[in-house]
Image (cartoon, rainbow, N blue to C red; front, side):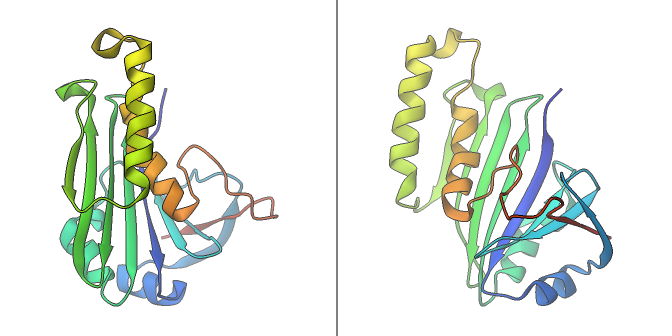
Length: 176
């Protein structure tokens, strides 16, 4: 069992504007964990929408560039069953950078597109050393899988396998 989900975080637009642009609506229901098909949570600097779908139609590059007009959007996708992860950043309507790991291409597979943010080099170095120490290609663990979610977390303070500590019991709002 593992995660197969995605999320996007928006900074620089109100939650109402984001929901309107994505044609999503609040239901008034809340939950402790993001278990519904689509949920949202307001983080201190980001409005976050979580999809219990690895590749929802709302996460196309075209759609995210449109959403990122006049703001910043970070998206993250994880599929733990095949050890695939991706993080991307869109800003002011542009596709700024992306990082993709696909273990089916190899444990050390990492595709980078665009100019990487400052945090990337340190995360990459640590994870590469961990993979090397674990036995490299022959290891039973995939440290490179964590590079995209770790980078996304350093930027947004959200990680797919953790509940944000916001001082409320049920921080996720169910959307339709």
